[in-house]
Amino acid sequence: MRTLQFWLLLLAAFAMAAPLAAQNTGTPGPTVGNAVTSATSETAGNITGTVTDVNGDTLIGATVALQGPSLKEPLKVESDYNGFFQFKDVEPGTYRVAITAPNFDNWTSAEFVLNAGQYMILPSSQLHISAAQTTVNVQYTAEEVALEQVKVEETQRVWGIIPNFYVVYDPSPVPLTTKLKFHLALKTATDAVTIAGVGVLAGINQAGDTPGYGQGMQGYGKRFGAAAADGFSDIMIGGAILPSLLHQDPRYYYQGTGSTKSRLKHALSAGFICHGDNGRLQPNYSTIGGDLASAGLSNLYYPRADRGTGLMFQNFLISSGERALSGVVQEFILGKITSHAKSKN
Image (cartoon, rainbow, N blue to C red; front, top):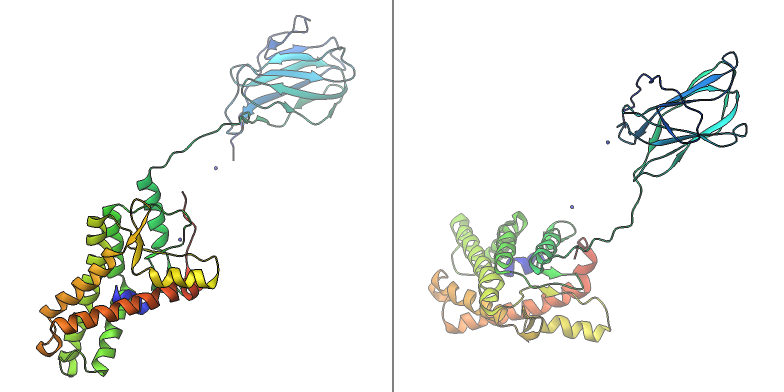
């Protein structure tokens, strides 16, 4: 992961229907559609309306009660199949309408005045479904939680630009599946900024004339290829292949709290001690093996003068030092300038 180290988220409709012509028998129980009072036809008024829910759908069988100081007891009707209700021959006065229906919250109108001979149409009486307290237990599998965490990690970028995917800021991380380990490695290796970093690193090596590929565009091209091969082999072997075989987590676990000493110790040891998929700390064979394997593979394409066991271990030691320094930078600096979101778990 040398290159990565280098670079260090509907108005409800209203319906009205024509009233039915049924009459109230004078009993206080509800009738269907309409009710009448004993007022004379010269002074009586009518009150009509339609019962709907918040979606504009009419409600059948809702109990509609007309209440007022001139009534000994409320007049009651039931809304018909069109949701319609009517109170006929009602004496002038002050009233309110109360509506009840199963599974819906009660609805009461504001007080209104009915004048002599008035035909009053009440505004929409929309009933809301009753709120019920429901407890839903959602159980996520470990794989689902891991996937969510990786999605968050893939948004982590230093200054919003440089990928910083291999850091866990979640206080309760879960192990990665083999598929996610390979996914994260490929995501990092093929990121546009990672590739740009390879180009910059090749330019630095070109200026230092190392490895010995010569100068010019041909030399730069070879150095670009070598840097790309170094980074790709390191991240795939140390970040996916060995962690999958050895059941280890290749990510850096950000501590963020505690004394400076404890955080420094944590950061420096991260390249050599890792979390296993069983949650326990163990020697970081994956990272160490990845660095060694990548350094060994470089013998296949480095110039003859830059090959050999000595140079391989030299490159390994340099990578180990870079990784320890990277841990310190991750713990004390990059956490403050890395864009990241909270995962759901």
